[in-house]
Image 1 (cartoon, one colour):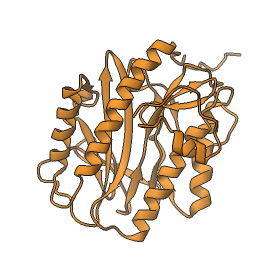
Image 2: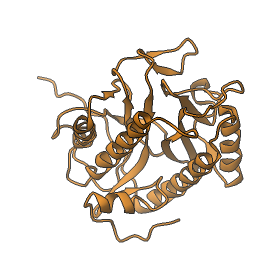
Image 3: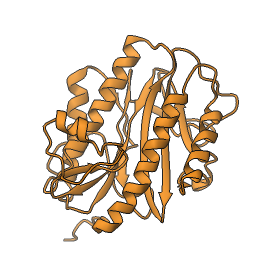
Image 4: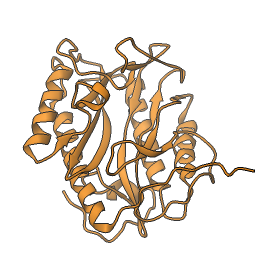
Length: 278
């Protein structure tokens, strides 16, 4: 009988995690810059150029640009676009849109990866609730990323929160991943599934967690550009992501400006004693 192969998960030293924090902080600050820049009339290419300039000016390298031929520094996915939207000069944001912005940066060979979904002007209550549910599901997943837990506990926590909030579509086939010296590493972290499966989480492991939630059905299709993934029914989707490190004292969210202190405290998770950066 053959044992099923499980890919090795890269374990980082404390010094390597500090380098990942530097990359993560750069990503987090870039996303906050873009959040403030989102307004009706701006194009997704405008946002992309702003992101690239900020990352390079602060000693980083955009992770996405040139990745398997991708042309942008960010992925900018509008309304029914779920992930991997290509920044374009003709993609003008309008009042009432939502735009998911996914961003990655490399600092001294180490990666950070995070995403936010931002309202453009005034959005409907339905879309605003979608953003709230998706972001909260991310934090429930991060809170489950404690030493001694199983990998699928993260997936289950995300799904359980979303299911408790209504009839949303949880995107399948896309999800979180290991991260470190590469942007995408083993293992894949789905946004659904039962708890108690997969590798045991150990201090030094780092993952990117990223729920994608649809207002309608979960079904997706990739457009002819070979990148942009959209909902089949044309309804809106939201996407949030953070990179975190497993520590003995709880998850340390490397791409959050406060390392996750506000959200994890709200969810009853004891923060590690490391001072947060802002």
